[in-house]
Image (cartoon, rainbow, N blue to C red; front, side, top):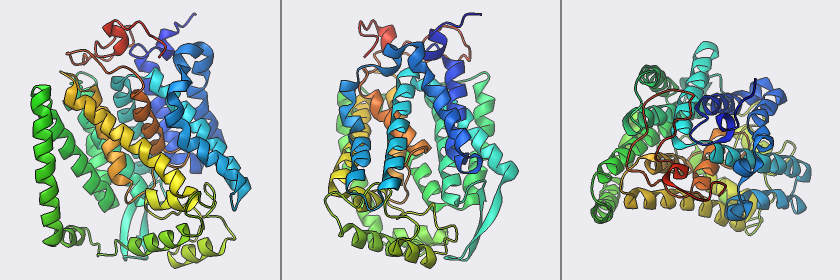
Length: 434
């Protein structure tokens, strides 16, 4: 039996394969530490073969992706000055190939498929954690929390946050019904329970903030583009004043107290201070990609001991920018920040200027979630993580023409060739391999 290429690589016509590939990817990202290298090979197996099916459609024009690859290339080049060159070389190659897979996925998947595949992927990850998960005692704050099948409650919370957001996007923004409404209801409830059981303040607060922001932007989208811009500026000014007033009014301590946290954020402020001190050793280019948390290095061993990390691995500075400064210096920090802000403000611009359609709003919500979490977690600078995968997908979507349709996608789950009118190829584009 012959399988049409469109059912695998053509955006908008490969819903079944896209959902399957994303579900596999989510599971691998979550549990590759448990299942080992064979699971990583499975991740590569669902994306790299698309190049053989139709390399022009799968790869596109990589000249346009130079700014997207810049951080990954610099991370790999840091092997030449790394304090642990073997570790840096291996991790650099892994990260670069991970970015390539993400960009292949970006070109192969439309926003509808990305959303629905993320619902099923996050749902499978959370279901596995519910079946095989455990509780951990945190010696730093004396609490016991559900960590699922992860080593950290914050990772469980992250997948729960993604599940909540994508369920919201599928039902509210993309108007999915029929099969997907009950699926999203079940996954959403499971995610809400995992958020509660994990007691991850970072995940709960960022989820609430991003959902609120997305709802606000959805209201803005009902207005004409010119009115949106003026209202957004006014809302930004008002919001900034409100946040500053809340900070000086002690709102932060009240919020932290509700989650059983203190002003040190369970030792994170001390960890940030240690990271800033470590960054001073090589402030321009860093000590090498993933060359700090290496067994046998005195500072890493000291911090593992102070924070009761018996495994001596899987630890970081709990701040994306500090971690980047330590490993890749100011140059790496500039490249990563540029990638973050390009995705965030690029999709924000599309939301404020498009006449209709919610594709850009979904991508903006993903970018906002990753950006907000970046100040307290490390989600985007390591390979085989869902955060970095989504970051490069959202950034890569900016290299494609903005959706031109005024209609929302059909809520039909089917594997046929019905393509959302919001996809740029359906708008009469004469550049199908951009």
